[in-house]
Length: 535
Image (cartoon, rainbow, N blue to C red; front, side, top):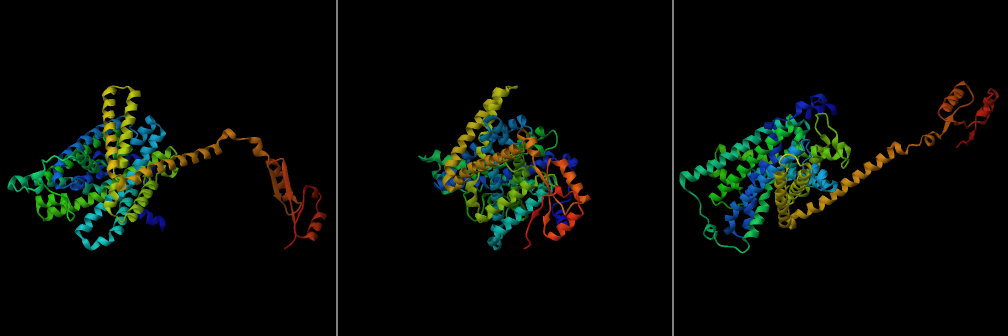
């Protein structure tokens, strides 16, 4: 029954020889690895506005400068990761780059940051998607935690069925959201051109006033909007999931993903600024732009449904990358070796199940509240960005291949930029929950080192260097015998082939029977009787 149920839910086992058939085309890989980053455009602009709103609506004019800063950072990160894919075609991303160029400890910090970020990605994405559902259907708001857990289970199950199957299942909603988001942006432009009905807020009149803290406010808005960059590293961690030539296909997918993310984010920010929209608790910015462009007809509801779907399916990127990264770490013996084992469907099943369980625990602990979870977000990913870029600088310094100087300069600029962003994000979000991640990362590194120490101790115990053949052979072989007969003598002779020290033992529980047995045997001298008393 268990086997039948497993085959029903996950599918029948795949032959190892068919592993190459499970690799992804560029089109399929885009849906698997970009769902996290593309989903962020649904809320990144709003996060910027929420940060600006704390200092008053007059500062909404800083939306576009903050957005342009994020686009510039996106360009630097995408180009830099393209170089990482070229130099490290076997995957591993920031963990591999940092470990090989900056040392093991730096690599473990990057690994901890990424693993924590992937768990948060699942929790935040699913909670955000279900929040969109409960906003549309308030009657189910009290059941958001069970619905989130069900969504995590469904995504986990789809990934357990295999990489290709999960890509096929989730491709429709991802591409539908992309088309819908572009339609919303274009529709908002046409709306303005057709009617000239651009709302003028009271803040516009004072937007030009110089604030003494405008630069600090801009940095705060920039830090909040950097949620748009989460998921950029996904392709670098999952190179081996691509069809051959894997590095080339991964680089192309990375560039396409960067272009899609950049244009969608910039378009939504520009449309928001054009119509002077401000944050509203009852409706998201993207929903308002959607309604502005298409009214409240079928197109509006289709795009909203696709938005909810992409927010939930953003978790799929983590389910694609977390198991692969944990398998690489496990092969280095910093995680239990079970994480490196492939399941029946040629995916790293243990990593998938562990991620689903851990994210579910977070959802329950934080009551599926996006506002409680999101401050923990982005810190880890910028730690990984920074270590990856600095590691690539060291790599090019030692490699000295063609064009290594400009490559080294580009990665240096990327490292300096992302480290600066990391400091900003850590300071801005520290009291809102980022401190939890900062404490968790050292704890993870300690755990990695303890696991590695355990494997080292086991390997030492099993090492042949300390093997002493003579000490192994100095054992006494005890042969229990009922008496002296052909069977017992044969057993004793066999025992003497195993050791020179053989002890035949008969337990005397009946003295009369022992004397009777002795009368018929001539070799009682072989025995050393051990007496016991009947209870």
